[in-house]
View 1 (cartoon, rainbow, N blue to C red):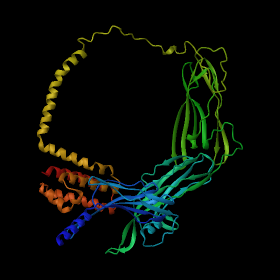
View 2: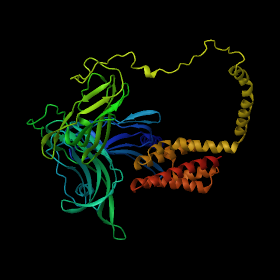
View 3: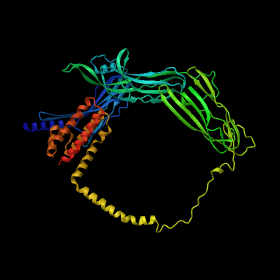
View 4: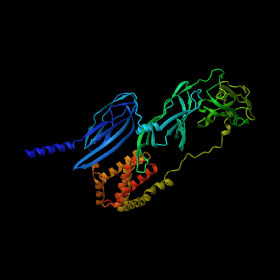
Length: 585
């Protein structure tokens, strides 16, 4: 009975230690709307196809971060794998973190839902040694608005600047919320190549970077909201600890900063003195009407251009229409824009180009055209009129009725003349309707001889394929290069994103080893990998390079890395995988 009892206890202990555990843990169950929540999904056996819950009531500001712990203590194996997420609540209320799922040994495991209560904002202790507090005091996002009380259709600018204290170091940032400018016509100004500048914020020395410049033209009057820009910033902040050289040790932190909601009060344009032909132009403009020809013959064409040039809302109003005598045939205008947008607004010109064709001999006046706009400098309306233009048609048929009449609505009837298109006629070219027979033509002989010409080509291709198949070493090299590209394709797509790139690169290396050495993730220890690769005939230099890449993937998550280093690590990984695959037996 004594031995049976010991055996039962041993079996029960073994079953308990082999039982799969998959659970979710929250850093807190009650938090303020201005605090953050950490959720860890832990498992004691390795699995695949991890599916997180839908964090619909939260914003994911960090993660997923993956960590694996695998150890042997007194002959007992301990394994733990964790997926971590950092969440920021979107609002107050009682929410539920739903189930996460994972596949382990062919079975699907789910976590238990977690209830979270989000309250109003709480006071965060001002601990000078707390990385989050240091980050909140050292980094600021500011929206600078050029004018808060503009007129309707007057240009204003919004410049977003990120101020950073010299004591912290920014690693990267992501936009988590961008302003939409619903009640404005907007255009972003290119800020590529902007350099970090020195400045002051609240009387203290800061460095700042211009992140975005936007030109806005309000399209409604009254109070309009400019939505905030929000960023999630990863940075390193100093701690109260020192290294052996006396320099402060840095700690990583994440901070969500927002430029805040801004409101402007848009004034309507005054009604007093508004011209009848005013079409919404606001700014400082010049106006003219020009003709490419003033003397020509009937059936010749001329270009009549109506243009506005200056600084203002050039894309937001229409040019005035012209009225022409009925004996001038006019076509729909071609609209052209030559506009540059800078922080001072839109600058350039817009034109409507009319094609005009006179039908009869005579002199035809093109009446003056007026253009009105609101001048922001004087805050008054201004009206510009063009000069009258006389079109002198020297040669052509006479029109005895109403030759100089003007159509007031800007349209004119097209006068039909049986000779008006006579100048288009040219000599005709005739072809025979009796086509030659296809038999014995050049095409016939080419199609007949084509199969015989294809036979030598097919033989040459077949011989080349046989030679390629016989090249065992060359095929092995090509297969190895193809395999390296297959496993590293996911990492290549994430180049430039440090966390995603090195996670994908590490997964690619692990998947390659699992496929090549036929081992599980839980067995991926350095000693076992080295032994298996050496047994397969892989040279020690290739094994050392492979281990260095794995170490780089682990260290890169905690150190600043630029895209050049990522590209070098990617190339080195591809070269090493290819080399191992060629050497392995």
